[in-house]
Image 1 (cartoon, rainbow, N blue to C red):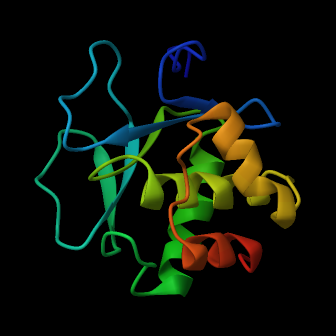
Image 2 (image 1 turned 180 degrees about the vertical axis):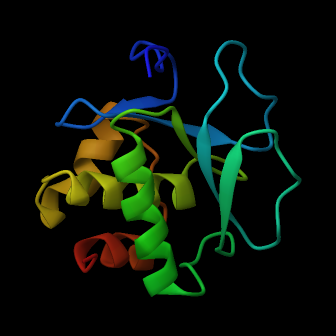
Length: 142
C-alpha cells in the first residue's frame, strides 16, 4: 500500500522494524486524513461499526483482555498487517489498553520484554500502560 500513516502524526508509533501503528482514543473524534484499513478496538463492550475492517478484543478499562490467547492472536495479526496496511489500535482513552497493546507489538517486533513499556512511553505517550498488571502482561507476553 502506498498510502501509509505519517510517522510525524500524533499517536503514530514507529516500531523498530519501521512498521507504523496509530494509537487512538475512541472518546475523541476521528483524526483528519487517512483512515485505517484495519483496526483493533480494545473495549469492555462491542464498539460501533466502522467502514474499515476491524476486530474487537473484549478488554475492560484498566484491566487485561478477557481472552488473552485471542488477544495475542489479534495483536500478531495487527503487527503483520502493519507492514503494508494502516493499522490502528484504540481504546476509550488511548493510554492504558492501547499502550499495553502497542508494547506487546513492540515485543513482537523484537524489543525485549523488559524494555517494551519504556519504548512505547518514549515513542507514543509517557502515560502509556497504566497499571501494574498491564506492565506484567507485557513482561509475560508471548
